[in-house]
Amino acid sequence: MQVSGPDGTYNVPAGGILSTSPGTTHKVGVLGMFTGGSYSFTAFATAGSTVSKGGLGYVPPQIPHVFPLTVNVSQPADMEPGYTLFSLNNGLLNITPNNDGIYALDAQGRVVWYYRDGRYMLEVQRLANGHILVMEYGGTMVYEIDVWGNVLNTYLPGPMGVHLLHHDVITLPNGNYLTFAVEMRSIGGYPAGPTGCAGGVCNVVGDVIVEFTPAGVVVDQIPILDVLDPLRIPQMDLFNTPLFNLEFGTTTKDWSHCNALQYSAGDDTLIVSCRSQNVIFKIRRSDHSKVWVLGSNDASSTGDDAWPFLTLTGPGMLQAYAHSPKLLANGNLLVYDNGDYRPQEYTRLVEFAIDEPNLQVQQVWEWVDPDYVPPLYGYFSGGVDALAGGTALQCDGGLLTSGNINWVRLAEVNRTTQEKVFEATIQQVNSAYIAYRASRIPTLYPP
Image 1 (spheres, one colour):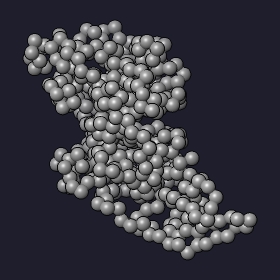
Image 2 (image 1 turned 30 degrees about the horizontal axis):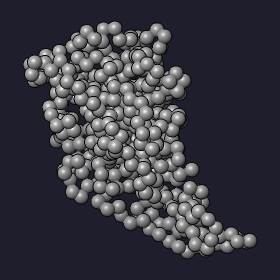
Image 3 (image 1 turned 90 degrees about the vertical axis):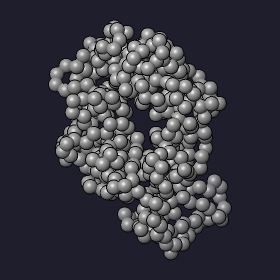
Image 4 (image 1 turned 120 degrees about the vertical axis):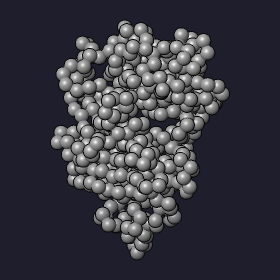
């Protein structure tokens, strides 16, 4: 099948041929068209000789209740090739009809693929087989879809024997998945006044790193309460957030709030980001021991005094209540630094070079978009994707207007020149929008 449209002519790749056997009736899936574009199709068939038939035209209709997207910068020649994949939500805010769904933008910022099923979605990522792994907000399920919208696998925390599945899910080299669940423990030793816990005994919710197979069988668990100090509370207001009261049916404390995982195959370690603890740390999978901790010794506890903290050398500063650390090919760490609780709260991208043997860290790059004064501040959510060509894709998923309305920004920056090569905003006066992360995928078609 040949497709001709506003951006040229191309042949549908093998991943778009949906027929599985020879015959006279075939099904072909065409992806990447945008609303209002004029397209024509030419079909080719071979049975001894090749024949073709064209003349079929198509203009994609308007997406129902489409979101307000403004493209401020688009320099396709300077961008990483591919499509920007992200989840977008406003249904959580009781807005009807809503735009909850997964979307893909081309280099011009046009919506060329989307998926909606009525759920509020958090993490979405493209798998090696071209399918998309989706994590529903609230931790109620993880599911796998193909690009045609078919649900292929569903993972529910209850049958897996865990509480919730949340924030991140990654694929290990053995084909298994890693994600976060949660557990609750009653722990004493907290200050009764600030925590509100009778006798200083709190129902503490900590994260659990869970490894499960594609069949949904849990094969390993790492409780973060056994890795970090349960009495460590960098910010009491985060600790007192009643996020898990409904799940456990009682008053709970949000102790760790982990939000990201990275796997390092070279030494079989995990890099973990826990926002409520204000640390990013590396642990060995073999014995769960800490290799290093990116953060600061906190005065709330003595239990972290012996942790292997990295010492910042040279100019710069450590992250503050961050999201989305990405392990780069050179061993550095690229981080979406939300910047909470600083004297001036603003969000940046920052790259750290880690000297593991000497437990030292250097800030080697940062980007604060100079086009915004004061700087943008995403107080929650957000992420960064390190792209192969040397750019970084930033998703500011939790920005606020002066009227306290949430809005979203997607931006791509050249990490060498500091030039912004793409920017799109999703903002509306009386309607809030939230995103989590974004990634750049090479193609919409499966391999």
